[in-house]
Image 1 (cartoon, one colour):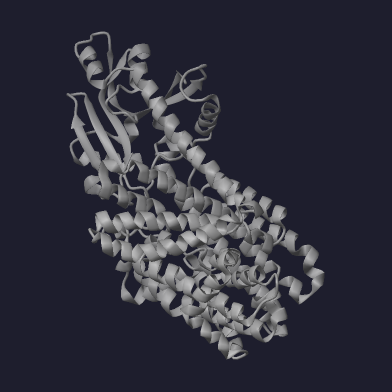
Image 2 (cartoon, rainbow, N blue to C red):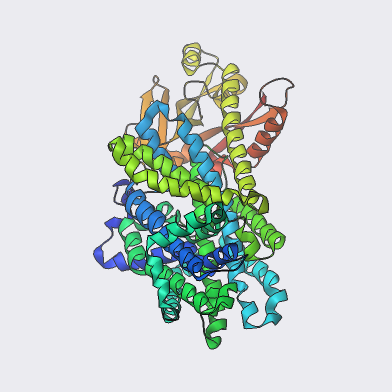
Length: 635
């Protein structure tokens, strides 16, 4: 379920598909893009009513809350994401890091603080990614208690079993199952719409919620007392950020069509139906979504809801893999093992370490909180923070990249950002009731990213003090007669092309050997999701025996070094990959007191380096042609 590089690189992404395939993309986007937001009716109105009804619930409050839900969906999802943010694509790709890349292109050397915003947004996304499977599946399984109270003791164990199965299947690949995601989720939205429409007639005055004055009146009428309610109302738009993140998979047009013709109408009808049911039967506020169903359909509805929440959780997990892959490519995290689970779909990847941490986090949350109502207090705060960051970055893109007039940017972004800041404030009051969980997770990840960036920069600086420049080395060995010549090609991978690779220095110092051809190869990441073959390779001759080669990959690509080097042969570099030796430098670290990083950060950095995936596998090097030489650095 991912676009190919050729599609994304032309700026059209999946929109370039033929018209007859448009409906397939629409159905596919319903399953992947809207799975999360599509399960929000299970708990959004219920938690909002609970927050407002501690001292009793007036009919005007029910109408006001439903109005808040409808207009929150309209303002944040329809206007901000569907109409505006989907336009801010980076050659067909979306997501926080794509927006960061666009902003960096617009600001140039002034963009150093933009990356920090992107890191915070990415960290908040992972905080949310741990909570989403827990609250979604738990809220669906809780419907069994309405079938019969005898199921209540089994809610937590069943939730744990379902989630365990979901995370276990990741390593097997979800390619075959994913073909059913869209149709099943489409059925879910149709059922949700029918149930809602069937109950709107219970109290037709629920349609007054279409008037935004009811939403405004609720907020101003309750003052600060409206904040807890708005924190629950925001649950209705969790998952909206997937519209932008998954743009490269399906394209703008299918995502917009799915929202306008299926998702938004179904969500609106569900909230109207639930609201009308509560107006007619106030006691049903306990769980209005499932109580809309007739008795004979309650158990099938619980099964369908569970399947829908599993699909929504799968989309979040896949998004976490994609985000982690981008972070690795951009040098924000160490190399992590990436396995392909599909031969035909590039986007089907599995990252064991990411999957394990998500699984452990989800299991702990389900057991610790015990109910979706308790988890709701922890849900939303990470998403609001991510959305505020998205709006901030988007305003910079509108102003600097698209050259909009400042007053236009202000007129468009200010109302959206103001509402999101109110939602952020309403969620912040939940910090001590569980909101600290995603914040702590996000802070931990941000600390790791900061440590990795800081530690990597320090190691490179330290390494420069222990070696010499490549130019100096070439001059010193130019007329050397002590060195034997190996009749083949050596490729040295290095992060600093101006300095002599440590592996090359070891080869000369200890083996007294210099290969006939020596290629100093650096792998870089561009500010675009994909790089064309024409821009992939840059070659700089350094004499008869040496060349510098810079390989560029997009942040959505995987660095296949041998395949990229094949392009260098077309530019005159004559060598055979399978008769070439790849030299890698493997560093180990020794602690030095009162030097370099603080001891806690040093220990964290060393632990992260040990968890990094093997460079041979990461760069797709032929294992039987790789030689690793060790180096010890004091940090």
